[in-house]
Image (cartoon, rainbow, N blue to C red; front, side, top):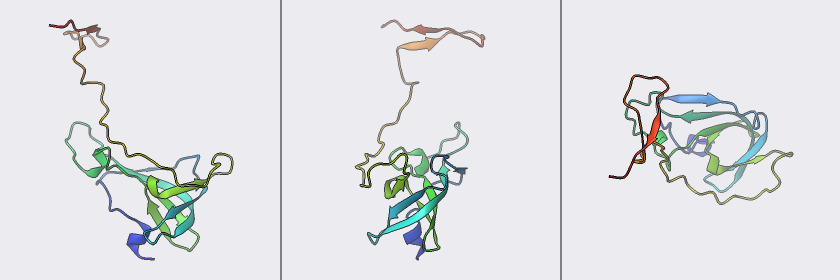
Length: 138
């Protein structure tokens, strides 16, 4: 198989992280290729990307919510290995999955943050366990 049939996207960052999800470990799954054929395989591990330092501005695709994708690595039944994102895969876990249909996933488009509120502030001191107070409207 061609590389672009086994993996849709290049790396999203220079900072990969490898995770093995216990629930998927050794489980069967399938992905739909560009050719509209389902390819069956066994889950090995997941590669995810994200900048390791929160104080450095990083505008790679891994930091943009609606562009973020991880790559689940599968050992295919045809002898190849594939790296596929969530939205191309369906897992077959007999004790968990009950349907074999393509879900209608929605793309994450929100930037979630808890620090943009104008309703609270911390105290101005050198205390480690500082108080938080509600701001009064001006």
